[in-house]
Length: 255
Image (tube, rainbow, N blue to C red; front, side):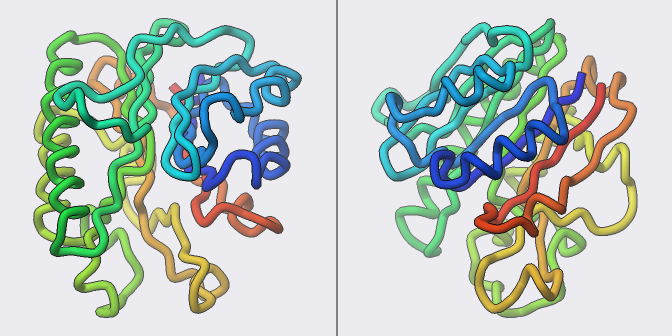
């Protein structure tokens, strides 16, 4: 099963990009983030025409997450992260697909920091850690796939001091991500490629795509029950180079 994650950065604005990638890459399961579309504006018909069924949680103008499955309907299990009934931001959705529990995750960016957005990011991460721990204890095949809005190590970003104050690289953000790995989640793409850069995001600003000044924000974290099945993976960098592209590229693993 080929499982992919893609921060599409506005699904309707980049529908043609998404369709072109799906037709070429043919993933079996896709986690999408940053739909930037309210619930009724999700292009379910266009995706169904390609053979994909979907579950999604939309939000007007911001956020939004979805899970697509080729040739089958995902069985929805959760549309929000537990722990805060007042949080209405569409950042987490979970479904069962072909014996695997799949979560599409969009961690808050947290900028500017310090400030309330960074406080929210860390609180959201704490809720994710709590729920992820419960999933780990279930001892079933699970993947947490998405944009974690963290650069875990200095090897995961181009050499720069210009982002020293950015929420993506703060020690608190990195500790939160490390907490997931400490629970036993496996960075599936690093299992496939233990060494070398794995960029998944290139900012639109200052020619960073053209200069290959990227960073890694997108991950597929597999439970041990799934990680043992991973046999390949990669980043579809070509998608970032297309006209009207998202600032992220899809990441995927075969398992």
